Structures are given as C-alpha cells and as structure tokens.
Length: 129
Image (tube, rainbow, N blue to C red):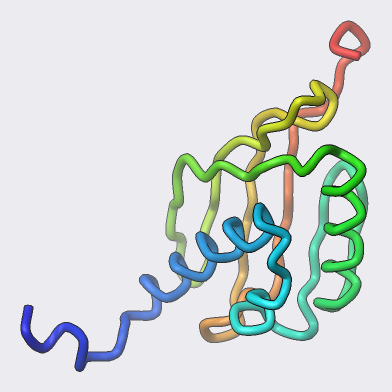
C-alpha cells in the first residue's frame, strides 16, 4: 500500500509491537529499549517472585534474575487482544528446569505504553525439583 507509511499505526498494532519489542529487549538485556515502550510507573506482578513498582526497579530485578538464571529467553507463542489489554502465552526457555516452562502475561497499557504486566508461571511440583 502506497499510503501505509503515511497513516498512523492502529493502537492494537502498536500495543502488539511493544509487547514483542519488550520480549526482544529483555532477551537481549537491552534495557534502554524499554524507555520507549514502558511507562515510568510500570508495575510487574510475578506469581513466583512478587512485585516490582517502577521501570527502574523492574530493570534491576530482571537483570539480576537473568544473570543468575543463565539468561533465559522469552518465546512468544500467541497474543490475544482483549479490549486495551493483551494476553500473551509462551515459554521461558532455560537450561535450568526450575526456571524454564510455560508462561502467560496479562499486559495493560497507558495509551501505547506498557503500564502493568501480570506474569503467571507453572508452579514447581515436588517431583519436578
């Protein structure tokens, strides 16, 4: 389409692009990229490791986690749009069995910026450890 680059991107497309870019940035430990796609008051709730409030706190916590866990990688398998939110399903790939596995994110936005993420992971069972 000739005019495609002249028209603004639709909000759904931008939100989806930001979710994918966040996964890529986290996988690459490229935290500077998050400044453009996440709000400063970003809130993360992880069912396994608790909450972080604020972009800087999240970056610090994520960097520490990834360095200690051998740099696990987020693999997005599906994105489902629901109103102004996106439900993400995928995998966290890791050499460590206690780190890797299925994951789901519920991502909320403030305009185009990622504002809140709820992360759900499979709980470890006694025979898995």
